[in-house]
Image (tube, rainbow, N blue to C red; front, side, top):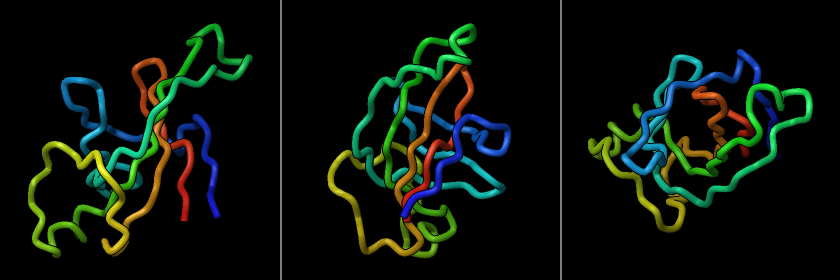
Length: 112
């Protein structure tokens, strides 16, 4: 099951990226999430009603876990995310689609 958020003010997030623009961690709804794995990324055409602002969005599908969960499990490195397979044994982890549009980041979709 997934929940779509789109590009609304309720889905705004702060995202910390590495030098290549890939997300390391993000804050959303008062919580901080550590990127465990980058599953893939793609360019997506912006909806026709937003084309005056931007023509495309960079979307990243990532696996992430709440930072509190990561700290409790002994992981303290907030640096480079894993780029391999998902760590399905990590409690409270999930798959997120996050997008960058007009220098703003959005949570596009959350998958359970």
